[in-house]
Image 1: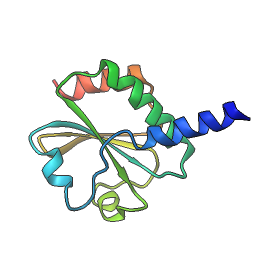
Image 2 (image 1 turned 90 degrees about the vertical axis):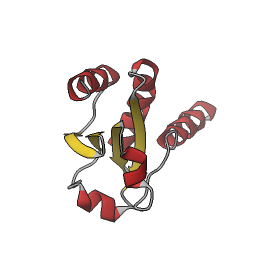
Image 3 (image 1 turned 60 degrees about the vertical axis):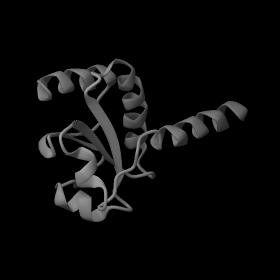
Length: 120
């Protein structure tokens, strides 16, 4: 029982490991940077897998790539603005502009490859 609780606690903590963006700080945080924004919901099981994969990716990611999260339950306006209709969705931004989106679960190797392709 302790192991199950510990695994649950780790998965919940990993959802909140990156800075949460909202409608007030979104534009400022993503401008002039290479950014991956994870649009997620706390109730979404695949989103928890992506959160863990982002943690693994964080170890090998290029230094010029920043990762942020947007909880669509709290920031529905942002989700609508960027056309997020399925979860999980990762949107890659370059200099404040969306350049590519990925729907579904990507592993850390796929995240690294996508970063190399999108942030040349």
